[in-house]
Length: 415
Image (cartoon, rainbow, N blue to C red; front, side):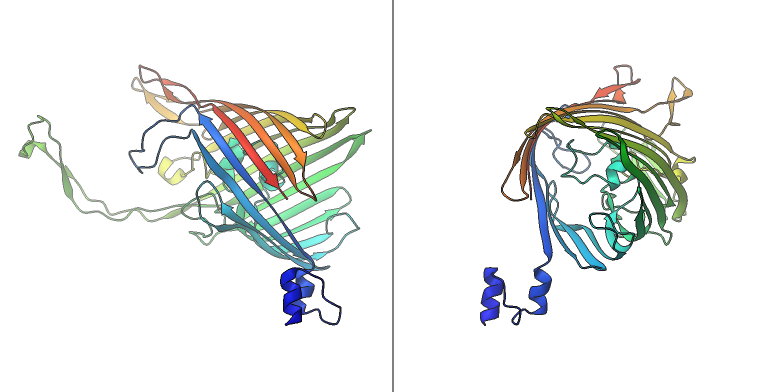
């Protein structure tokens, strides 16, 4: 009884009274963060979607993310978990969980060898694998990172290691990250995605540090089939008299349906990061990334070459700079461009032409930072995204730029 009361009160137990549970709890690391946003978006409308009935208004307050991390490390094994308590209205769900075994390295360095299984980030692109949501200065990842790896995390197993200045990882995962929607936490086919990443980092000169990374991924996508259908008909009131006549009944022949099919997909990426300590200001962080992919988009313009009749090639790149202005403020800017389908075709004036669907986004932001007691910290971010894409139409029905600017204010607390 005394032992239970001491545990509940959080008081240390005498060595002779410690239970296995008490010894385990003693080494648990607990952390997390909460992000609350206020958004103003140019495409927001006071209307409902015709298809889903969901509000089209995006000028609103929202709880963007609330995550709780619980980790426990022993010398050779460990367990890590992250739970999403609230994400833009979604319910509680796991976003990361893995058990791992490792061969420890030198003090303060990553393990020499580590094997893990569970739900963990896909090791493809710098933003998806290296940057956590509370570590990144900018409010959200780039569009191409969200396209090729929506949701960041996927179920699988991985082997990673660290030697000298080189970090590497090879993973086998379902190929359906948690942001893919219908197939999240599942896999519609038996094939698995294989991805890997190598990163070399170290000091360059003086206070300048650099890191160079490369990522690859190859897997198998899934194109769902269609069920068979019967012959039917459709009525179109051509003369708008509200009466059905035989000439207005249009036959629709049935079909045998189409079986589901798999297709190949792959991607390669490269990235570079530079850190430099500037006198009287703070750290300057400059980084960039480029990605080439085929049939890999699963978030922005999901690829389905079976329906499209050809492969869907994608190209994305970005460059960003973040500067600390003492420990109390930070400014940053980012440019990104993403073409989810560089070979898109469209019929215009009876002629099939190649249509370049580009998404270009300029992002600038400033944040105020404050240290709280212990390891906790708080941040207030003001950010403006200026996005243009070619999804719009002019009065003649021709492709035109569609401005989709976003103003974001974010309050964040991490511990």
